[in-house]
Image 1 (cartoon, rainbow over the protein chains, first blue to last red):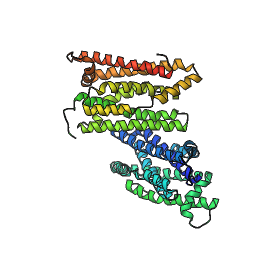
Image 2 (cartoon, chains in turn cyan, red):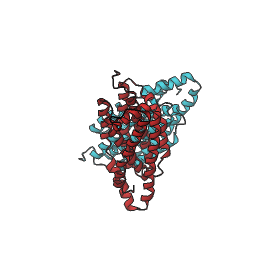
Image 3 (cartoon, chains in turn red, brown):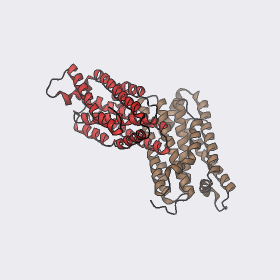
Image 4 (spheres, helix red, strand yellow):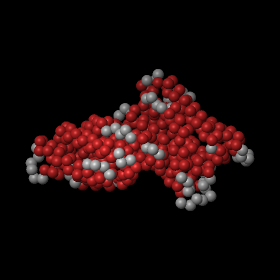
Length: 227
Length: 227
């Protein structure tokens, strides 16, 4: 429990954000299992949820190692992440699969992007969390299969995917404004040699999030959905 | 994936029952977290749920090893276990804690009792599942603390605990009638040298379940509740 030089407030924010995001994913996956059509699919969702719980635990442990109170670190992100979950409540099993795929995809790109900005130990942890998220193929295949059987679903699910991203970007912007230390950390990867400034950081965070939607288009195509 | 001599239909039933019970506990714990008063408690429930998922996975894997279809093996127990969950839906955080403690306790006693009746590999697996359920202390302490603050809760929670057991025994009886091979296996520990018969097995299963309530009284006392 040594509080080393790595206990940058931006890193604590980042770990708190990721930890609560993982806890939220855990509860969402467990909850969505109610929509699962089979006992087998319910079991698969439980396994995915358990993986998220393990990530949450690792991030929480890291916060404690850095001398931070994990619940305090998570607190600022409860409202925006809960808001995203509430505004994007899936109404069907397919919507819940698309949400898992789109949400995991953006989260994964985000983790990969920010991993390089934190201290080495945090980077290794975040990369580990990222590497274990290997369900993309299963979800993309299931959605493609459903679209093959009923191509009319494509329009509605494409709109749904667009809404998921729109709501995520909107919450991310709110977080960036409220957590300047985090915005500064996230902007670090984009700013280059430019000096740090509040407004400059916000613009850099915007550019970073905009670039995350590039991977999103590829994921939509993988599911057979329109951009 | 060899179907050895251990693939007794009663053992397959037992593993199917335990697997679906663990999956159900997983979903219940994840669901009850909505009642948890703090972010810390939510995280703790998520950890408990993840442990149940790991048990489910181990039992499911064992079913596959025995050459059984895990979902088929679980299917007969979906209705009775779901019925128990539905009839005992906690209305408060304390009720959900008491349910966890009472339910885990009975399940633990049941596992310990039946472990000796199955083949060696199944026994080791079931004992492992049992050994990991170490949250009793935490729950009992939390309930005692709440009763210390508001002793009037004791009557209501005692009734609640009684209802949990009553509903469990009722579902267990229904299962014993519907699954004669399982009843035969469970009766094995009680029957001794008596020859196996349908009605004799049911009586033996009744005696076994009745004896499970002995541990239950001790658990009620540990929580500060009346028997």
